[in-house]
Length: 319
Image (cartoon, rainbow, N blue to C red; front, side):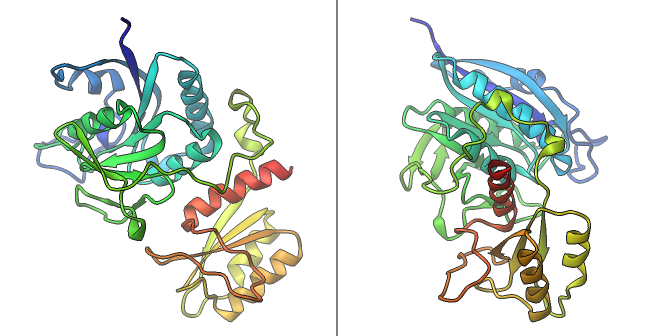
């Protein structure tokens, strides 16, 4: 009987980073070690039921993630998901923009099999790198028969694409699912689930994206920017973005999406001129709860960076 396959796609990040000294967990250069080398360094798991296939999709520091990489990554994931003998996919990724990539892939692909993003907070050359264990945990999730959709695995915790956020700059357990809570945990290669695998009912892939292989040139993707409300916030930033041709704006409001009056006036003016505006919150937990009379639509619980992805795809659909 042919073994199922786990496809491991490399995009770079700290997990593939190197430093001059094993004790240096900060002064490293990301995206130096190829995915084949990372996979070759993993221990063979006794009784392993899946064959591993690795492919280098990109080799970047995830702070520099762009739409071109997103398009190629979505196309490669889509390609492998059409293969009936592929059980699941693992993507090695930098931590800085992992949550954005996860939500983009979930929205455009809505996979019925697991697509697992994993990462590291320490480079591959560290005295005690966290990447190898994270990769093994990700493979365990990708191999799980009931798993589906895009998730992230870091420090033994499984997060959904909708909920995952990077919340710490240094510690190994750098991600949180906020008040939604994690999907579960990976413990010695076994999964302990805390809730069902999520199925998102909003922000479906826009109808314009009928074939992932034909995603438009990233240079033509709608321009959406993020602004933040804060004490003393003004109108200048919004006016400059509108003058520069921005097509969408996500505002990270205070509290329940509240906005400084000067910033709100500029956003309403932008909205009246045809710029799409969405209101999120800069709070790490909770979501904007709409109330009667709201003029700027809310983000349906998405964080500002994920609301930006959703708005960009909505504008692409409307083009």
